[in-house]
Length: 297
Length: 111
Image (cartoon, rainbow over all chains, first blue to last red):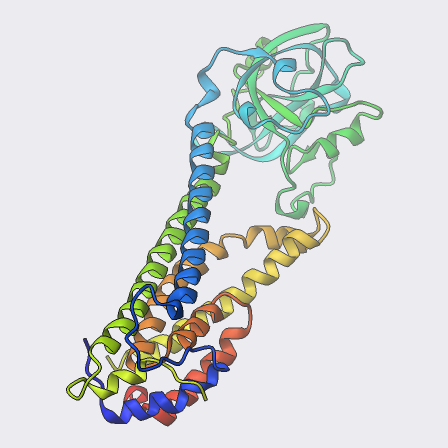
């Protein structure tokens, strides 16, 4: 127990009233922890601890949920038909990130673009060769397919057109991208080279065509593409897209529990101070201790 | 322990600024139309709440120690703590703390 000087005692008394008299004034009777005067403190502590602990549990649950969702690296699972994972108008499913899917349909060459700023397997700058593929029949909604990676100086004129007729391919499902760098990077006066793989950009090239809110990265380039020097594209949105959000949840959970513990500590001190000082009340007791307890103005 | 007071002031400033920035970013994130640049900025600034939370924990401990030193009552300590959670309040509270300490505990204010 810290001993206080008389000077600080006076200072404490002088200030005590400024909280608008929230502080209880203690009578000369002995306070026990069950005394009615301390019920307010008990209640406040209970509410604070309960709230903080509950928030901690909530965040902890959210963290576990996210971890459960992230733990599965879906890139190695057996491919399923794309229509089993996502529909043309569906939001991107969490369980679909990086999942191998089978797509079968016809390429829509009118929508072929190059997406700039894509790293190759060795990290060198390059482009993605992308063509939407209508899933099933030619008039069905299409999903953009990354056919492969080409060096940065490649242009569409040098690359083979996508095969006609029904094509079957397997690729990893990815959510449609957000605009990169405000799309200011799109300074190449070429509509066929875009900075990000956005459905909105492709829709302009394919009037009246419905597009999925997702794209597929082909696991292997098509035979014709491979012979023209198109390499397999690497996945750049791998499953833990939300790992940080998960980390955030556990950090919040710990925070809340620390606050709960601190509230318990404050409550314990308050009760101890309120009770022991009264119990020790007497000629020999340190009078300065009284200043800990605020008095009414 | 004379470091306590300057530490408190720095923490109060940091917590206060983080709180205001965090509050503004949350307002932008939830109240503005999705997709606008400001809304996106608000969304990007969300991690500020983690930083605020952890620094606030340090602030809580320092405020507690300071209130012990200065022999403040429990409600006054609670005011110090709540100030770290209500945007803007901490700047006013910090000024009051400085005034109080200057008047009553010059030995704590000396650096």
